[in-house]
Length: 85
Image (cartoon, rainbow, N blue to C red; front, side, top):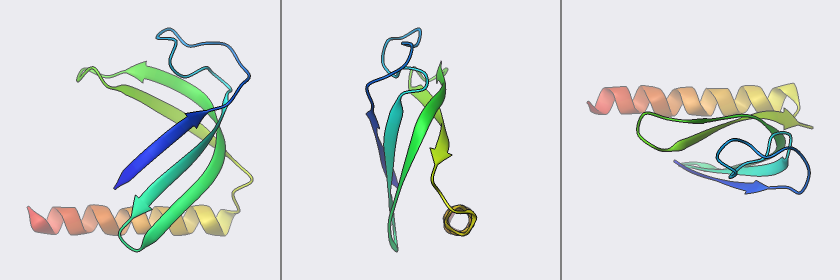
């Protein structure tokens, strides 16, 4: 699964200067059975122990049914990965 984040144009810059808090963004997830796209706002940014930057977002205008479907698809991926190992 791959994802991409595109920062918007408003907000306060985070410590690392990469993803401003409250900036608008589009998340695009490439899933085995299609794509998921959603609008959101950056709510948290942290540097991981692996030196990657992790971004949390709040979804904007995502219906409950769409969110539930995304969770179901991600759970299926997790289950399939567990079976492979």
